[in-house]
Image (tube, rainbow, N blue to C red):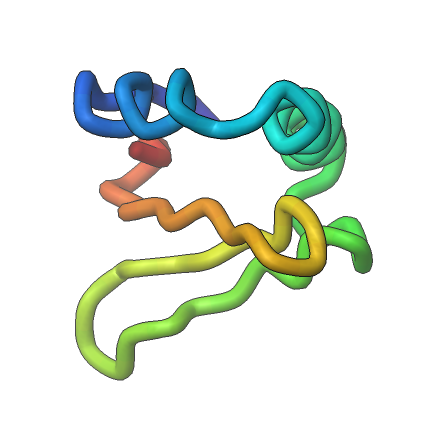
Length: 72
């Protein structure tokens, strides 16, 4: 699977506190190794669109769109 980020995502990420950025990097490493890792709780959050969410920490989630083999 190929993953990409958008400019909007990178800007939002840069505004996060350092400890949340660190957790996001850890979550992304887990995601790359096993997108079904239990701590991520990766799941579809929209009934008809390919929009997914993954847990980054107790109060943060990352959203993704899946288009074929690409996660944005």
